Length: 416
RNA sequence: GGACAAGUGGGUGAGCGGCUGAAACCACAUCCCUGCUAAGGAUGCGUACGGGUAACUGUACCGAGAGUUCGAAUCUCUCCUUGUCCA
Image 1 (cartoon, rainbow, N blue to C red):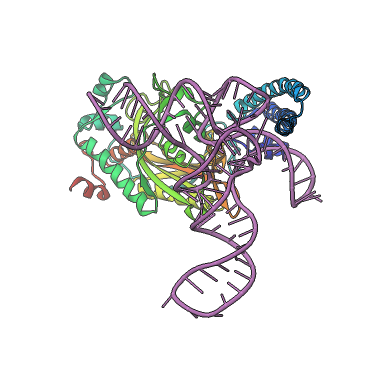
Image 2 (tube, rainbow, N blue to C red; image 1 turned 30 degrees about the vertical axis):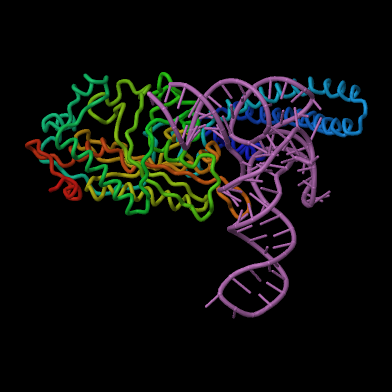
């Protein structure tokens, strides 16, 4: 959630920054107005309530002294009617404000380049050079089927489109990758956690998936629970509504979970293969940090994800997301794109974001900064998307006969 | 699944419908005293939002929500969680 005090203080600054993200200034104007109206309504209600409390106190005194209370009671009763009205107005305004405020994205950092979509993202650097193939590189679905690693039809049969099943070395590689990634992240100081795959509405509001993106989520029918679209949701919200000790920070965590996305609006994109599935494996990094720590930790997280790809000998590049491609909660984001020779292009395999205090404000995660309570910064990033890593291994390590070389670092995980 | 009980501040734990934002103790912070393998004393110490340069002050919060009442941590209802017992 954006900082309403900041909005009040620096309306022009805030609205200009949000305009870069396509948020209409009139919306911000309306937010500011609603906030001011709520303050007035609150003040009105609180004054009446203060009167009421004072009169109620007198009641006790009157009774003890055996005084007549009829007159006082008439006054109090009349005041009560006004309080009820004032409270209704206040609640209504509160709801209006919240509804609007929860739907406004984070303020993009000044370093975020302007742009409409992913084509305007800015490359930061390339790591490793894609190798030349003496033959035409195949796409991963072809290789996956040839090797019997992934069965797309049978996945669809037991669920629906955009589901797949892995067999043999395909399945074992997935597991090896998960373990390798978790171990790697752990070696960089991220504590492993294991969390529920179902979360409630409050958690999703805390990290910003709700209320705006309900269509992208799988929801239980008989309970207010949702399948997680990313481990970021349960892991970040572990500390929801807590006041942490300064010495606890930063809290660096890594978690493996399945992720579930409806992929609403992605019809026709990546329909073949396992680039875009409804369920996929992902190893995630989440950090809860003091504000002054978050820039450095962000860099550490980017390095961690990039170094995993380097260890797997997969060429990739880092890009700085432009305003148009930036997620709802992020102040700034670096994507890591892995080279896919079969597709002859770089494709996203990780996305690392600093949300600064955007999620912390929603999820009420604070720490004791001396005597004051201060919102923490929260960061999250994939390290990495497992399915896409497998895709990258298949395409980059393919031989002319269709066989695939296993990366050295994975061999211990496969008993090789 | 059924019965009963409980949910209070960082922790333990008191709380009669008004004098309780909440005793006491522990922890923590600052200060004082003392000089020895330890302690003693004083003060402070919840959160959110609003007003005030500030001292301070208003409102709300004792699992969540609703209700009764002039007034609720305290009474009633619903829900959630935990514990114990039963199936």
